[in-house]
Length: 587
Image (cartoon, rainbow, N blue to C red; front, side, top):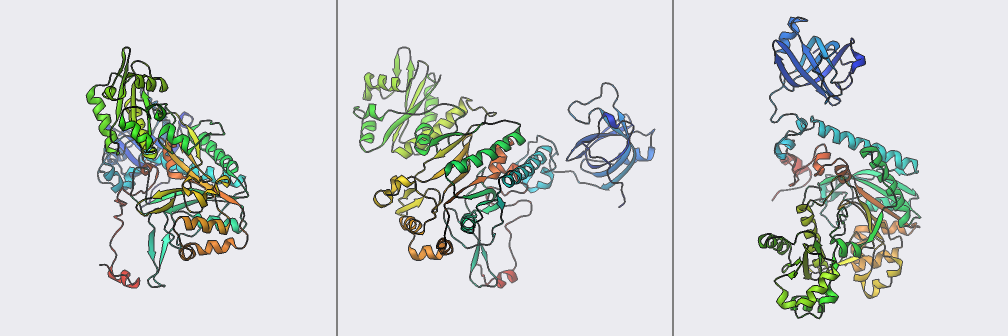
């Protein structure tokens, strides 16, 4: 079909174009027939322009315009004119003008879409994902994809200026399952053998340091076969970074510079560096999370020392066993009803708590069901230590250290939402450092790596690997933004003997280590430099900077929470011939 190609986009025309002859192409957004004159808003990704079809100007074109419907693709030529007085549209950048049509070509006709192509729509996400090509016509989705594109450019420009080299690493690699499950790819040539899709380029980027690349980065696809949620996908994008001859401050400085560029270019916000820092222990004991949201207060207090001698056995016995009694003050919540308090108690019980101790602070004293067990003196000591005032509500949990603070962390976020304490326009960045090197998995009866098995222990904790591995801290660091981990990394182990010792502590035998990671250990024989790095969750950063609640809204073609692509119906069945070539038979 022959049609005139556009001279301008639908977001170009302004008052200075009045009198010009132009051609626009795009989709019919809205059609209105007012007293014989047909108006349409023509849309492309650059904006919208109103087009007028007047029978007095061209009766044939006007008659053809009567056939137009939403989402028809057209080409229209005409003259730019000023809108009549009183009809200017301040909400459009093209709102001063319209185009008086002289020619019209209907390029393709369209069925009625399953939902309107509008900025704000009330439609199930499954429908949006099934018709993703229609969802992506909406301005907010296009804005997100353009923002993502800009972030790619910012990343590459920033790292190039710092002499980093972008190196592509393999997508088909050796399976080295650590953490999430691998996605496996069967080999047709090597019967019964499999590639894995990379969970990250971790081993490759460390080998690049051995290769002398010194400063590497990559915008890379990663794959993890794990249970999904709003900010997880089976395939996701990382900004991967590795550097040689560096320590933690060197890497943090590079990261802070990139984040400053993102905020300046994407949000128009200036952020200051260096970012705040806190240890893992401080984060857990202050906020109940290793990714604390510091946009609001509600910090915790440990009252274990006060209640260790109390007659209330729930508290004193727990402290005697090494547990803690801790909590926080909910300001102005002292008037909560019993039913409201029961809701909070049920919330904590669902998280595994034995219960929730609450104390209303009044002008007359403290009201709590545990007064008869604790006594007024202990209650006043708790109130004083927690700096609670009349009208406040004290909430306490008593359990093992990790469980107590994890439950309090979830309760803290729940109260913040209920009390509207979270400023959604605020951005708080901070580093969390000094993570534990290992955590004990009682099910597998062995230590597992908190980050990954290539993370180096802090030098002052090296001796603990022989005496008390659970106390060893890692040279690991996470970057947190508004309660979300957006980047994580560490200084790596570059010594073969230390790496072998860590493998041993993780229950990885020398034979298993050789089978899984022998290629990297072999590379370390030939001179490995000290090195470290970090990986950014690109989708998550893009989500937060664009004010979205799900990474699916910043990914062009995402999967559902069950890892399905509703648009193209993948994963899908394959025919028997394909399976036979791979020597695979389905049970």
